[in-house]
Image 1 (cartoon, rainbow, N blue to C red):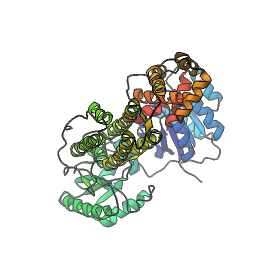
Image 2 (cartoon, rainbow, N blue to C red):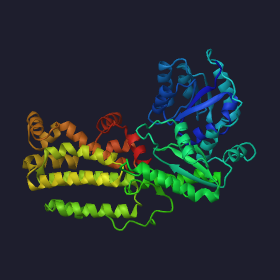
Image 3 (cartoon, rainbow, N blue to C red):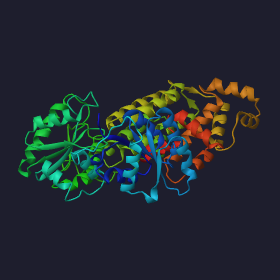
Image 4 (cartoon, rainbow, N blue to C red):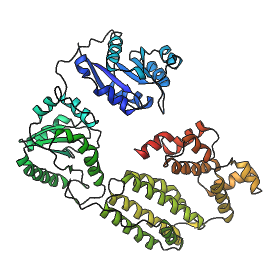
Length: 513
């Protein structure tokens, strides 16, 4: 059976991936770019999911480089052909990939579309069972929309006529919304589009090939029908909102040209989706109907908040936190990820403050990681504050003595020493010597006061500090491993992933995403 040859692109440079995808109508040549990945680890996941015939991969990538990727890929899927891209003129850098089964290679500085096409044709010819042929359908609408979303300009003669034929009206909007069957995240896009057409038959529409948490649909209507369309969507959202706890519908402002779609998506719609974090009392957020955005009313005074905790004025600390949340909700300007990171750090600082007060609660020590997780997973500011309110209730019990107990002064000195010297070669023997303890006794003494052993607790201190440093983009990961007391970089990465579930580089990318 003849079909298109499926191709996967693996390269850490976004512009390279987009340049390959959108520089040619690949389907007209018999190829279908089925997906992309930014490193070898993601590439293997995409291969498992998409089952491509050919993989185009870079050599130098973070997380998993091209050599390791090719070796692993060919071991798992020997029938998949690989084309290697390299920025190096020295053949030695690609020799090992060829030895492990790569079919061909291209030097990046010389990369052009026609050369890549020839290499793809040669490589596809090496797959005996593949009978591929060009598609004669021309550019698909999804291809052109993805090209526009990626910031490329459509060709006036060959591509724009396809768009104008599909979207002939003079008013456009973008709608991100929860489908009727919102229990299914993978509801078929054709079903979503059909539902929109059924409710509003006067419009033209198409699902965007966008990387969004919600389906995004492009709406095209006659200008004099735009207001009626907005009201229909508002009624639809209000009815759907009866069964939902948070707003998940957003509608962009009106724009007059398809060429503005990419800008509208990147600069407005993504922000609107994020604003849902603040507005739980609206079924739909419509651009232009929100209150004017203004700078935050005041900065949160962490020292004052912690002083309330230290002086056992936990209720005052709680009220101060609630007032700050109200300000965040009113101004809705703060980045959601930054808010969650700040509040997570606040939880950590409160637990440290309680330890400094010579008060401990084993329950709070165990539950703080659950609080971190719940803050990170909250979809609204209201949910976050419910988590913080529960945390402050536990803090109040601890500070008042009903949830905690006085700690051993010797243990307090020991923990203080570990927090002050975590960045140094700090082993059980060194600490035992400093406090004139027998190492074996110190190990037992430590375990009797803490739920984890000495080394695990030390690693926890170091990893928490490493997380803080990784949130800054001006220190390399190898420098951070030394700064927090690890002389072996690979061991640091192993311990970090054990505690956080992420490698240091992925943790940093998640923070700066």
